Amino acid sequence: MLTVRSLRATISVLGIQPVSPTQTGGTLVTATSFDPRTGTQISTAPATSESEVRDLLKRASASAERVAQATPAQRRDWLYSIADAMEFQADELVAIADRETGLGRARLDGEVLRTAAQIRFYGDVAAEGSYLSVTRDEGAAGTDRLVRVNRPLGPVAVFGASNFPFVFGVLGHDTSAALAAGCPVLVKAHTAHIALSHRLAELAQTALSEAGAPEGSFGMVVGRAAGVQLVKAPEVTAVAFTGSQSGGLALWRISNERDRVIPVYAEMGTVNPVVVTEAGATDMQQLAKDFVGSFTLGSGQYCTKPGLMLAPFGSDAAARVASALETLDPRPLMLTEGIAGSVKQGLVELRHAGARTVVELGDVNVGWSAPAAVLQADISSLSPGSRLLEECFGPVVLVCEYSSQDELLAALTNLQPSLAASLIAATEGADPQAPALLQRLSEQVGRVVVNGWPTGASCSWGQQHGGPWPSTSNPGVTSIGAAALNRFVRPVAFQDVPDEWLPPEAQQTNPYNVPRRVNGILTPAPN
Image (cartoon, rainbow, N blue to C red):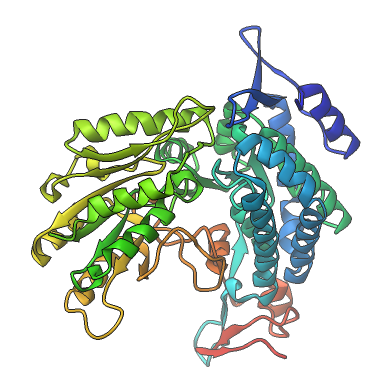
């Protein structure tokens, strides 16, 4: 077992200031991770004290100007250094992660490589420079000369997720995007994988230092109190969060109670619907199999997990999905005891709200296990305020049948907005239901998938991973993809300012070779 002593020794060797135990009423406050397979303790680490958080905030604030002034190419080099270090230490990182998450080496091997690739991607986005939105109005006679450019916000607090220890962990999307945008980052370690969080922080500190990044450009805290302190701190300019609605809303409320309110970019997730048209239901057996593969992926612990299927009356959708689940015979292992408990409680609540169990599988007496289940309900039960409209985070789905397009559209209106939705329609020829359904879904989600599943979200230029409230706290941004950098900058217009006083990226000579708009004409970056 990795203990506090061994963690502190490792941290010290790698040049990171170790945290000290925090006393609360004479009790040592620690973060503890467990093996989900057995429920046994894996590692512990002391919470960061108030004074240590203040010191980290001071360092981050002191580094902010230098981080912002680094060229986009320099920030790309920092991120490439982190990605290289992750790949070099991949075997060690996967071994630590597997002990704390039970996700298996095959899944985690792929996640490490995916994370390294996304870190490099954000570095490339920074160097490409279009996120800066440089706009120059040179000013004709009698008009003002205006130069508009996005500038970094300053230190950003990042709260990672339990379900993706690498992709949305200490060095995940939020951290990489904020550093790429020119902001120092302070991460709150996730208790579910505390040893991995420490190891990733060590790796990042070393890689950034070797790449020439300013001291204070990255730091990490442990413990809920330390996380709250970050959100309240005047030095912090924005918060990025991935996790539950309760956690995201708590941080959002704290932010809005500050003297100077800051944005909280919380990706919280809700029920992601799958809508099957009459023409799309011709092979319900195969569709059910694919649906089961999607909602049981990672034991249903994806924020993009499809949680509700709306299928045409007479398609026998619930029974076919249940049969496919029985064939798969899943043995869901949850990441934490709390998640396992919430799945069990969620099933009780869904049944109380009118859902009927079609099938329930799994041995719930092994480690942090929970059942996989298919439930069925009358579509009329999907009414505002019903528990049936709320997420059950885990391998649980609800299936409802509709008898008309009007009934289906009415049900969709009652759903909470979500991150993603799938539309299963005719693969050949026209589908009379599809256009109206596509339009309705696009009004309620951030991403619509046609004849596919929402579970994966690629890190690319066109990605949108976000949706209307309450799936996220801000529907205008994404936490995955090139546009993720936009969360950590704000536009500033400089009027009649001498060119040499402007930020370099906005100057007429364009020293960073970024694309920009000059007098209304969009010009690409010079070759």
